[in-house]
Image (tube, rainbow, N blue to C red; front, side):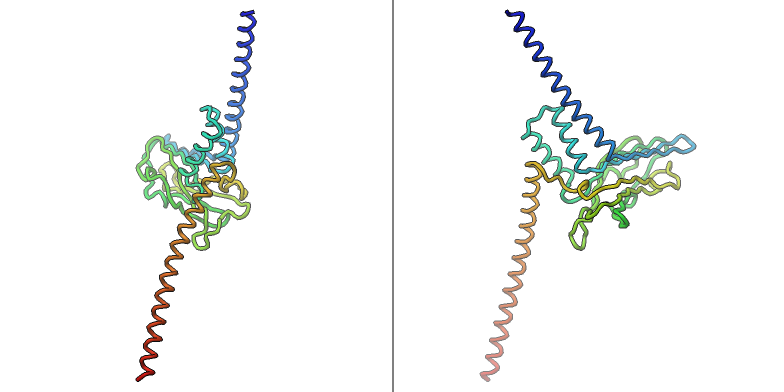
Length: 254
């Protein structure tokens, strides 16, 4: 009887292990597919053996969701732990303010001098050109070997506040030829065809709800400040009107 129980538990353990391994493999496979879809890579060489490599990963909703699922499977997180991690991750990449692009550079050969880095790169959204709003400051340092970090491009129009991703379009990331001696006179150009939902802000799960609450609280704080400023202006206007009326009454009595 004991031997039967041992066999049963061994089989049960093997089945559970196989299911966990399959689930993790599926999550990893989906992540690899998302990485392949949203990453672009170019490598440049010169006659002296110099190599300059650029890889850019667009943080789309699909890529982020698959990255989170892959991490959850690897770390055996609960649903609550996954949502906490996702919330912290989305905040760290400022997804509700900017469009983040994860950039990986490698320079083998002559040193690359890329400062100021915000003048070395830009993003075309359709036929409009945007400079980075923020970027990892390490990209300003002379480059030999590998370096990675995030660059943040605008998500909203500076004048109107409306999203600049209001239709299907092509994104083109450009790095100018002066970024590396290996490039010579060539520009780096990396393209993505995106739909509006690809580059939106994740909207499902408690992490997305918490981010929306954060956004609404920031909006409320801004509106409250504007309301207080308008009330001060209104009070000043009222006091001025009272002073004018008092002066008119005084002049009429003379």
